[in-house]
Image 1 (cartoon, rainbow, N blue to C red):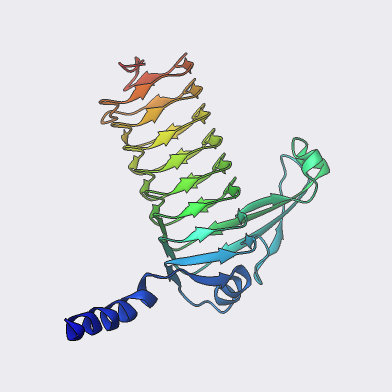
Image 2: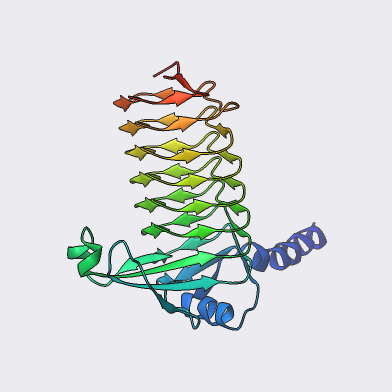
Length: 256
C-alpha cells in the first residue's frame, strides 16, 4: 500500500507542472513579436495590457476620409493562445483620448493588423478585447473563448475563414460593419447582452446553428448569402431583422 501511495505521489508531482497556469508578462509577448518570433502559449495567465498597437514597426498612415492621425502596427508572426487567461486588455485598437472617440478627426487612433494565422482558443478575456479596424489576412480562430467585457470587432476585415464557435460574450459583442470574405461560424456561441451585426457583410455562408441570443440582437441591413444556417438558434431578447435578406430574399429566422 505504501509503494502504491508513493507511486501516485510522484505521478501527481510530474503532472502538476503541465496543468499549472504559468504567469507571463504581456511585455514579453510584445518583445517576441518585435523579434519576429512565433507566439505560442498554452495554460498561461497573461498579466498587464497586451498592446499590439505599439509595435516596433508602427507607422503613421494617411486617412483621407477623416484627416486624423492614424498609426498602424502589423503582427507579422503567427500567434496562438490556448487555455489562457488575459488579465488586462487585449488591444489591437485604441485611441489616445477616449472622450473624443466619436470624432476621429480630433483624435489619434492606433490599430494593429495580422498578416499570419491567429488562434485564440478556450481563453478568458477578463477585460476589453478590441480589434476595431483590424485586418486578418489569414485564418482567424476565436473558438470557445469567454469575453467578460466588450468584444470590439467593428469594421474588422477577415480575409480568410473566421471561427467564433462556442464563444461566450458576456458584454457588448460589436461586429457592426465587419466584413467576412470567407466562411465564418458562430455555432453554439452565447450572446448575453448586445449582439450587434448591423451592416455586417458576409460573402460566404455563416453558421449560427444553436447560437443563443439573450439580450438585444441587431441584424438590420445584414445580407446573408446562400448556405447561412440558423438552425436551433434561440432568441430571448429584442431583435431587429429589418431589411435583412438571405440569398436576396427577406429573412427572419425561426425561434426568435
